[in-house]
Image (cartoon, rainbow, N blue to C red; front, side, top):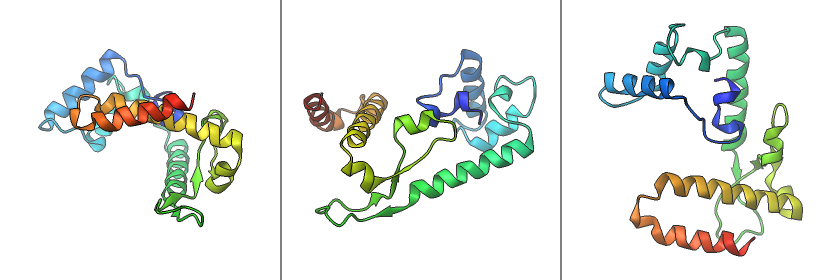
Length: 159
């Protein structure tokens, strides 16, 4: 997917009305379920509103796919920190916002980030932003109200 529509490029992808309508059309065509395979199939048509969202040059797309696989490989590796009391598995690597703004992005070793005050503060800012996104996604679930309130207190105290 082109970087201007990629959530990892710094936030939620903002779709224009035509693209949103097309995604809804595809979902309705498939019993209300939107599958990536169906989206790609529809987007192959150069006249489709979704067509410009994809890289159609297979050489470039192949390289981009391998980069996506590498990012996945990095994200799935976890470890248990020696000094962590019952925290459980922790990602070995983490991508901080400033790293994602650089060409090619990057990941840092989590232990190093936790030990560096500036990087730790950036990780906390990233966590707060991620929480706000998660909260906006699930705010309609009243069962999570206590979690929202507790996290709001933690992030408010950190400012």
